[in-house]
Picture 1 (cartoon, rainbow, N blue to C red):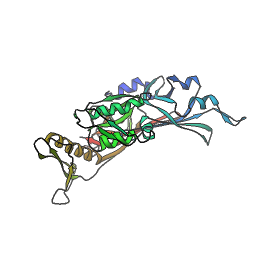
Picture 2 (cartoon, one colour):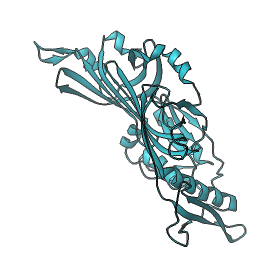
Picture 3 (cartoon, one colour):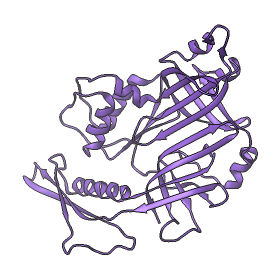
Picture 4 (cartoon, rainbow, N blue to C red):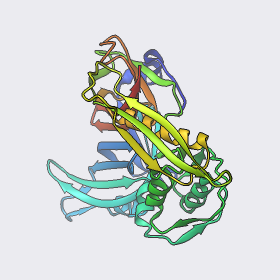
Length: 357
């Protein structure tokens, strides 16, 4: 989550980006070599905001005479099995996913294939059912640790600690995923991102790692790019209450489209939010700025495609230059990334949410 590379370094590492490969580990063992699997297709969708998923299509395991798929393969990928997936070229791969078998099925088209659907820990958190619990801890990051300790088979945690000094226990009445994403983050209690990559679940400051993964060059590894910047013009005011001083406190921030914008109305619209938990001016200002930053990033969107590059992952930035200094030459924040391997063809697609010039 912090590496930075040049194209030449990656080209050398992956031996010219030839012969893409998928490694699949089941309970820590290499299932591809052990079971002699032919991975016909692999599609890996990694996301900041939703559960990540891998779809594996396995060929050459159907017995035409007995009308049945290989029982060893079906048993190896039984529902609930822990699976890791690595992608790369030739013998060099990068671990991008750890999750569980969420569904097992079959597909009959050009050839019979076993279809394995893998999901990361966030999907399991959604399926765990509503939980009624009081979290009697000091900080929201401690709450996150408590919740994620239930899922140690699928991930470890990487947490940016918060310093909230909670006075009252925090009540949970929903499933673990909704609790973290809505109660802790969505309601603005903790200025954090929650996402999963590889073997780790991250609870970190938004847009934390500012270094770009790499600088992309159109016509070399960058195959396509589309960007859009929407209209934004808004003042934000967060109102809280300081019980010790018995007075209201406020924090302000603003967001507007910086690029080629003509103002449409005279008065800038105001957005007010009341939150009694914001008991200092500093907290109110921080929350207002957090809201402004998120609104600004959500106004800047786009999509792109490169040759298959395992290092491109969500939660990081990539840089594009020498296309158009206003519309394209930015440092883009990656929201979703898809790695897709079909035979000898490996492509990486990505969705953008926000950028810095």
